[in-house]
Image 1 (cartoon, one colour):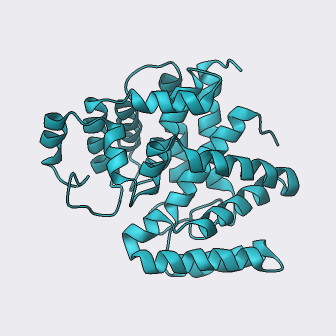
Image 2 (tube, helix red, strand yellow):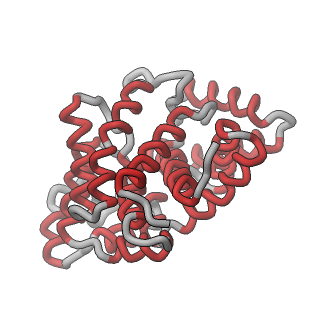
Image 3 (cartoon, helix red, strand yellow):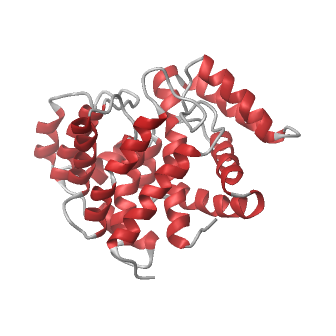
Length: 283
């Protein structure tokens, strides 16, 4: 399947919009509710502003880190508050680059990740700081350490190398390190769920399954592993209930009241949506 760069970019933008608008995805902004400090409209704008970046990625222009930084810069120049889509863009940019390279998406994304370089690492650190993103703190090469750039240069660390160092405590890094293994698995589940339940319910069901399968990384970094495991058990209980969508609504209310946001799982879902759209998912 050979697609024009603009078509590939539209799939990435659509993946972001479908992840955003599907409801209820417990604890996340969707079309039915905002957060106090960041709104549904902010996420819509963030998605729209990414389109030129995705076009450049599909054409093979610029490095992965530079493209991620370009996306975050566009959000700040527009005046968007907070961190809207840093994790999603970090996952989607390599996928879009790969889709513009080859019909074999798995092999192409692995190739795109291997081609990352030191400048990608430096640009990624700058983008992370600008986005106000959050990950679990580490002692070595912390994303919040301004001195890390010198060590990255000295050791010649590609962005893929940094992701491999972080895979033990960060879900996004783990996808980079392992060729998007979980995202491809989620895409298969998503396609089955959409075929059986329709688009919105299929996306929500896949989100619950992903949350039940593995503790969310953002919850872990903000609240600790204990609460992340509690949320994982909540998702498992929702899936076992007689009406999992009604249970998801109740779970959503509880998590919003407690300011618990499984944002990393939403990021993985957006990547899975892109893979499925690229493979032919329609609705």
